Structures are given as structure tokens and as C-alpha cells.
Amino acid sequence: MGDEKVIRLDNFGCMCFVASGKSWTVWLLSQAWLCYLCFTAAVVAGWLPKGERPNPDVPKERWVVMDDEVIRTFGPVVPFILLFVRALSLGTLRRKALLESKIPHTAVIFFWVTVLRFVTYIAIRDYHKYFSDHIYLCWSIVALLAMEMKHCELGSDGCGNRLVLLTAWVFMAAVLVESYVTARYYHTRLATATGFIAGALLFGSIATVWRGFLEKSNREGGSFNRPLVGDCERQGYENMPRA
Image (cartoon, rainbow, N blue to C red):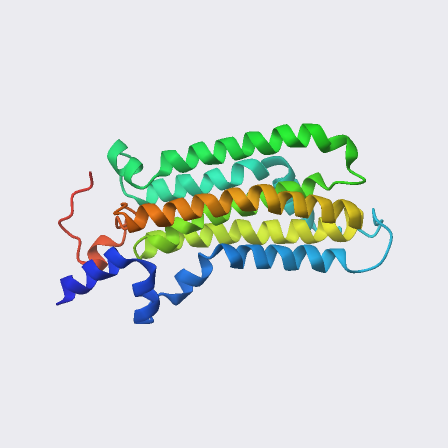
């Protein structure tokens, strides 16, 4: 009976997690709308206060400065770290396992989104008074994080999946701080609004399409439920091959 529960859990994915009341937090934290809601709230919180922008009273706390430097310098690379964490969590780097988990597919999508963001940034960087390239960058990061979180929603409920999800939300927290500070102290309201809307239409749409593709692939028998490292013993997969 225990094995049947595990098979059902893996075959039906997240809906079984929620139905069993066991992993609703995994389901909730894997939702794109939650990422978008938090990001929107951070931008609006920085956009609403009146005052001069750029604002001379920029926070000087060390952690705020470090967050800004990390996002500005390494922002486009951050989502790729999630792919690396998920690959390590598989417990094997064999080609078959990576393909089943769609890590190469996701990496290609990430790469082209990053290229697209860079090309459009070159085109609009001279218009920073009217377009916030930084909010636009943050949108691309949020969209890529949301795309990767879909694997956590569809995957097995275990420590490996939770590690990927935790890493994603650590990065998300850094983006939220950066987006608030940017909207509050650096860019005009018009620039923030145009950067946000453009990012939502472009990167938000790409993320929605990709998450929908993953959902469809999972319904048609995709391999998203492969147990991650650390999950096997707990879920009764002791003898499952790692190929």
C-alpha cells in the first residue's frame, strides 16, 4: 500500500501533494503568480512615494549596496545557477537523466532569453529617463526563476526539490530588494512603469508559454517525477537505477 501511494504521488504530481495536505508549501512557492505578485508589490512600493528621482537619499547599508552590485553584475547569470543546483540534485550527470529532466532544454531557453534581454538593452539604454533598463532586467530574472520553479511544482516532493525551490526564493528576495530600491531612488516613475510593462509583456509571456509546455509534457508522460538525490530512501526508491 505504501508503494502505491508513492507511485500515485509521483504520477499525479503536485495535485496529489495538495490533496494529501503534505506539500502545499511546495505547490504555493512554485507558482509563477506568487513570483509576479511579490515582484509587482516591490516595484509599486518603490514607485508610489512622492519625491525627486534620482533620489539623493539612497540607502547606504552594506547589504543593500552588495545586493545592487550582485544583481547589476551577475543578474543574467543567476537563473543558470538554479539549473546547476537541480543537476546536482539529480545525483547523476548522465545525459539521459539530464534530458529527462529537461535541463538542457531549459538552459537553451534561458540562453535565448538572456540574449534577447541584452539585445533590447542595447537598443534602449540611452533612454533611461523614459525606460528603466534595471526593472526590465529584474523582470527577465523573475521570469526565468518562475520557469525553473515549474519543475519544483511538477517534481517529486523531497529535499532535492526543496533545495532548488529554496535557492530560487533566495535569488527572488535579492531581486525584490533591488527592484524596490531602483523604483524608489533611481528611476523616474515613467521609466519604472515603462520598464515594468515591457518586461511583463515580453518575459512574462515567454515564462507563461514555457510553463504551459512543461505542464503539457508532464500530462503526456514527461519525466519530471524522477526522485532527486536524498529523496530515494525516504520515498522507497532504494533500488532505483540512476541512469
